[in-house]
Length: 65
Image 1: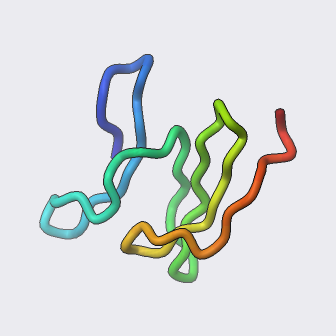
Image 2: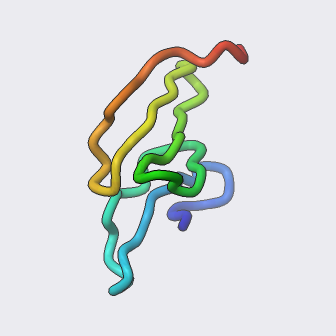
């Protein structure tokens, strides 16, 4: 789900009740697979895998810059 204006949109995840499970802070967010989702903030090249609560379980730099 997205939040904000089109130019400054951020992605996050909502739970089954429509509440933010992970607040919209990511410039890119992919679906969860095996309990993890791949997300990124591209202006500084950071990428991460997060769990359903938004905790970063791995983070690094994108090779695409």
